[in-house]
Length: 282
Ligand code: HEM
Image (cartoon, rainbow, N blue to C red; front, top):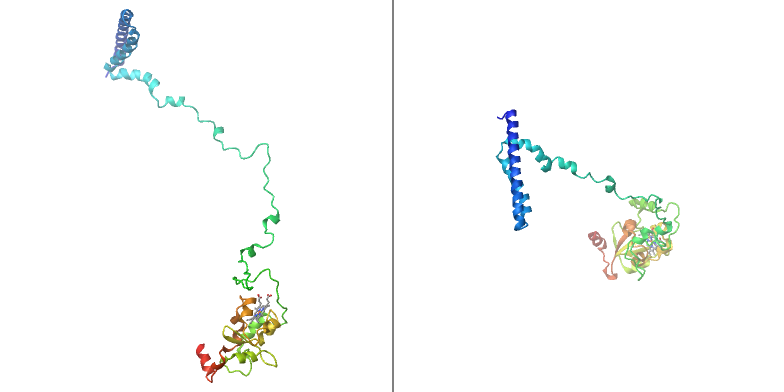
């Protein structure tokens, strides 16, 4: 290990040696400069290149202590870690990163557009009616099972105790015998001539056929929302066409199931075993 005294002494000696060498170099440079002026103008380039390598070569031969002493000087000029940080530009001002102003300073808030109530509604149809399929124009038939919304109602005012609920209560009791009097408990075969004679006149019950089955509609006449006259238009004949033209959404058998008399057969088809055949169809 070097002592401090020897260190300083050594450093002083080296400084003297360095100074002497530097003087020699300058003398040599001056001398060479004098010579170069006589030949070529390259002397100035030699001066700058000679000084730097000599200093580095001498220091490389010195001890590590010497380099440590020089270290602060070198570090201050070349190390980019800490000191360069002080040279970095400050972060950009926060005003540059602000989001764009959403609100004009001197302008009031924009009012929402004013909508008229009429502009939110269709002029003629309601939203629900606009979603429905348009009614068919041919033959008065419609492809939809929904009731037409714009057709004038032809319903009648039903008498007291003749609401649909009253009818439903009536059909639940089998003792009411809605099929009619003087009929066997089982279904019968009905010929077209029989159906025609059961038209509701002369004290007879009114029968009608629908999908090949015959019903007694007399008990339902006063419960029919469309009125007695409309329902009796099908008396003594088939009501399928009129029924489907008027209200295809109505559940026929759900209303008149207890009024089922029998099935419609051809004139010569009726036999003595009509009851057994009808039972077999059930
Ligand atoms: C000749 C056969 C029939 C005709 C001509 C007829 C006619 C009518 C008419 C004009 C209406 C009024 C529709 C309206 O403007 O709202 C109506 C309603 C009604 N009819 Fe008939 N009808 C017949 C047979 C039947 C039968 C057999 C039943 C039962 C199975 C029935 C059950 C009803 C029902 C439930 C309504 C009310 C419909 C509703 O509220 O939308 N009709 N009928």
